[in-house]
Image (tube, rainbow, N blue to C red; front, side, top):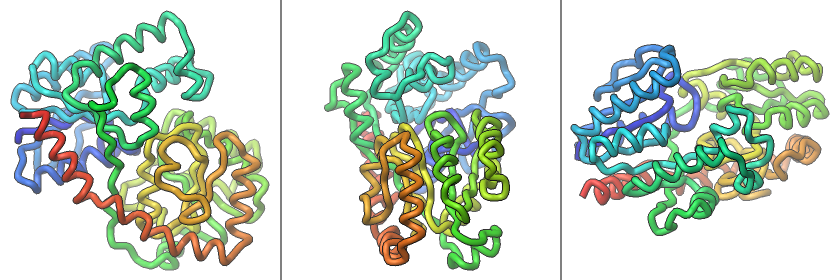
Length: 374
């Protein structure tokens, strides 16, 4: 097959799609398929074994969108199928213009994400589904237009599939395909702790510093757990705000902001941590949870969206209600106070991630793309 992969972000960007899209490209290339990529970037992406076309983010928004549609449409004419992990509207329009089947991976509600950027969504995701307004109506109509023209939809979690079904999409058109994990070989935890300067009880957050991560909840929970440190790897629109809150809470020296890191370093940080911390108000199927488990590190998280489909409370991690900083603080306290619990969760972490092997999951994706191309 000739496959076009579309992704809104690409390495060195941080985030699930920036990890997922290159992994899919490498897998499909190794299976003998022809692969091409369209993305947006701040500067030219590093050379790959396949063409990577990109639209500069320095181009004004409207013109950048047109440029991206043009790139998708042109590349799609050379493809048998388009697989898009983002840019829903632009992927849909570009594939339609080329008359090439589109398989879309939903990673969230695109209307909710855009509403967050525009300041139109001051409520949780579930409540937002019943929020009305002229601009929201336009955004939902655009979402419906794009999704109706897909040959298939892929959701990493059953919770997102159920959400999408509420938009009027036939559940039979939606495949649930979890995010796989490809963990590198790593040195032991003590060696990595020395390398990265971890001293004492240490938690790690890795991901975008964005509203849905609710990092204010994480910092409030950290504040009342003296002696525990939090290392944050990632960047995003909330970075300055989160750093300011850390200073306000007196967490200098305990909350360490590393900025965006290469994926190899992120895996090292996850392995070096005592546990990974995730305080999100909403998650589809976060890569970081599976990646942490795969390298043998338990996760302390809010029971948000697809997190509950990966973590089992008291087995490979601890879960608390979203938005509850007191409950999260208690989970942190309990984790570090109970040595037997900590050892049990750590021992169960890696075995619990075995069901997310890339060979199995990307093989299923290959079958989905083949059906759409046919």
